[in-house]
Image (tube, rainbow, N blue to C red):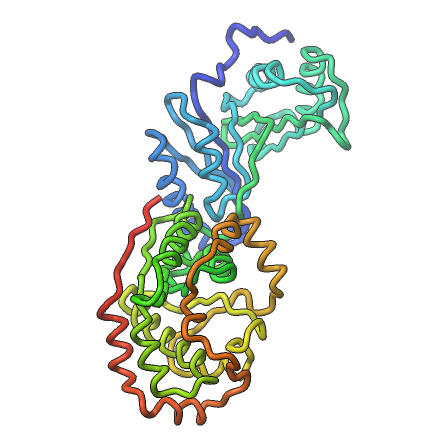
Length: 398
């Protein structure tokens, strides 16, 4: 039956988006809790672009704007929301074969392609026409409009049809999301972040598992410039694009380092720096209600990251210390930094906190008794309080 194109749904009158999620669908009895978290995070992005409404279907969410919006901007931002697997701008129509054909016509007549396929899914099993029949009916109609050939194995263009609870969504192009879990669902963590390559990747990996990060950055003020602070702000702003807001605790560490240098033999200074960073970060985590610390350390990448040294560093805190990069090599971390978009900022020159007052031959193997003895001349509370009394908090709102 010929479709009256004059009554075709105009895609430009209403902005409609179908959002697919993946891992959340496996949560069974807790799925609604995860879905609600994802909806909250989507709204943080979507409502900044305009008034909208969002509805849920099994395995899907449907976002609708009453007025045309900047589709490219919305899709870009939603593609950075953890928990989303795929987003597509769609035509939403009533569930009927003629309405589906009309929606298909609206899409395919605006595109150029020589081969195509139609893929349909019936989430609503009461609809009497089976998926294969839908593919054939709509495919035949698309072919009559475009004169393109059907190619089911390697089509130049694919038209998707999803039938869900009396509504049908018809779309072509889609954008891949990040997957994972909604940020915040797994609780809050304190991420130690430098101006380097590794720690932003570690934070990103924890966010993908649903953690909401609070960032802690140590810099060697007053002896170095603000370059590392500026880099960290840029990196965190990028990481939090599409996510709930966060904060960075900027902790001046230069005076603490000076006091350590006076009382600690040179080979052990980096380990001592790290022990005090962990102590201060743990107190900040407690202040923020965070449940764990996270770092960008990878096993044996540098002297302070051998197993024995990681043990002596961990010993000064009671909180779990998560190291999502622990089994990765440097090239793997670099490759991932490039994918997530922090690499270019990371390689900009800056004064690294741990390289300030860096000894020429840091120890690669330590033990708890040895480190505790070396630490005895230091007033631990004094140095921890020095860090806690001088930090500044920078809010990152996206």
